[in-house]
Image (cartoon, rainbow, N blue to C red):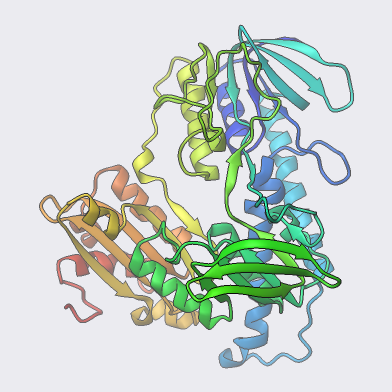
Length: 475
């Protein structure tokens, strides 16, 4: 096996494996080093996203939603079921099978594109050299024209509540429970906390969510966040805002948590706790001190607008650099970097990266929120449309939520689109395309949308910007 490559990628998650494939497509000899192993100890490409994040969580979200609907909603559709039961082992087995298939698919893509997959750890040395330590062998030296660092991120722990892998777990642990907790504590009401809390609530757990911020989903548009909070509370999530966890200790049967809010100090007891307070970049064992790569005070590798590090020929992408920790953001950075290395055009529009929370209802947005526009002093106009007036949403029995469109008051250019409702993660793609081409609210207004579809809600919200909605009262 060659020890010289045009490109060596360290990390096989959504950022790294995409960078490796695109580099190989560009005619560059490419190797990708990844240390992720299955529970059985076998190499498994795909990083956190495929192995213990995006994909397994969506599998459980889908399965738990079907169970919830079978138990509580099918009767209204004229479907009467008797004896609906949960088989958690079968549900977890389905999740594992999906993960295995997709991870194996990356191996197939590597083979088809000529990428050399290396299972083990990579350590960047000066001069674009990488010390590769196989999972079951002796280290060897790799030389590369360019090195791409894509080692991702890891869950952030609370000093007062360290992970024990049994009762106090991170997101990966919460995806692997072999029984439904009677009472589950979730610390953090962000994307991960809400998705995991939703899964176990649907499966029968009493779920208590402790969020340190005073505002629910502070990163989302305020109107959308309020609607989402209302829906989650209706579903039975016990959400506490401004709740700062002070300590936690194991008890005979669970974990006792102490938190403080405006009303004072409180103690609650739960069976298990999911700590979902964010993630931090993973660079442990990655960088030689003389490699010339600068890391900032928060642990992120410093890069320029095109993901070049402070060392010549070394690039960094994905969760290990600035910006939102999103798989699709890392993937597009991988494409950009691989194209730039090959001497091709590479660019990424960081202003229109969509975000999605895969709960029910789903929440998705792109661009700026109404609060951000106000703080920036930008004059804007807005329009909304409720899914309660959507024929397709009504037929689906998923009529909660709304679409919100924000446009510049002068130029009419789209500034932000926000959705809380069914299939929001799919609907937001239309807004991303429109904004990529600097589209206007009128562009959306004059675009024909099939009837009856959920996408009509986007159309009507755009019409509402100019008080021209057809299927809603314009105010």
